[in-house]
Image 1 (spheres, rainbow, N blue to C red):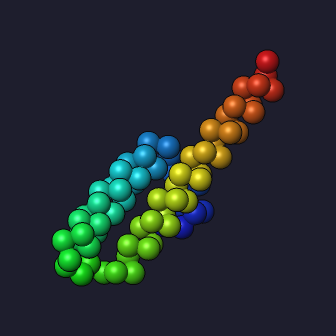
Image 2: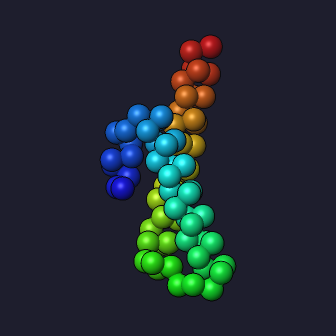
Length: 73
């Protein structure tokens, strides 16, 4: 998922996407730890990158909310 698409989605959808990605990453990590090669090794990097992008996006939104609330007071 592109960052532009993430910015336009609702926070509840972003949270559900984050949960799905974390489950997928956990599946890949369990495959790696048991010694079996993952189904798609390149997907592991993409999942980690998307999770990081979501965390960054959520933290930026929180910062904006704090700034908006402090500007009102």
